[in-house]
Image (cartoon, rainbow, N blue to C red):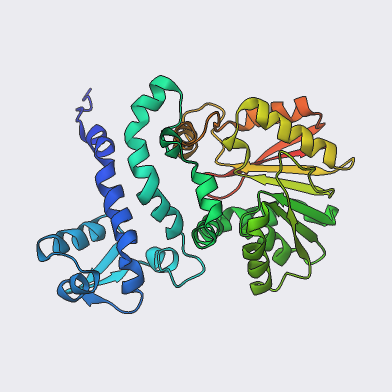
Length: 337
């Protein structure tokens, strides 16, 4: 019986994975995909537009072709269908804001993962006495870019929530930590009988309201200013917490779940959506790596499994729970009071 010959290929591809990652992040930083959205260019013209050194340009562009991020027809480079949709800064579907943040911040902080594993302490701005979210929320322009990126990333998940949850049973909802309002808007667009709210810090209001107006749902979506730890949650039929719980330690997670339970009427529902780790903790690589990202970014945050969340919901008082797959690595846990 023939035995499979072992090679180090998979190990080396993973170990050197940062090569491809940084190539993409630099392309986003340079605005390469936005430039190619105008028209295809040959290597010399594209290098000139991006102000690249002649020595670097050809290998850089061809590496992106090999990575599946660009197409080359003859001597001209063009976006793929995916990069044209998601990495052109002029499009509302642009997700590069998140990648820009990863390039500017997370790339270097992940270089300290070993220290985080040994100490359990954040490796971001906290080490130098700064506060990323405090700085982010203090700069309206930077904040708006970040919130728009959240919308681009959450569109698939938002549409899945709008389609899979039994919204006909309910009349109102509130998205807690709503950012620009990507999830709330998709639900409102799909279900015209619903009225919704987005709860976030006051500085988010103009970004949320502008997005709701642009999508023509501002008559049914309102902004609710507040800190979800310090202030009561909105009284509504359905509460949504998306990519919120993983920022906090278990005590804080339970506090938020209990606040949600108290705010909901009998029969009301809580939707928690995250990149849930699979219960066997073997398959959802993104969810597990996101939990390591929480190690680097927060004092006590961590990602969790659907089984974890359903148990926490039951401990908070919810009588029925259900886990359902959404889009990409995301799933939702539904708790009924």
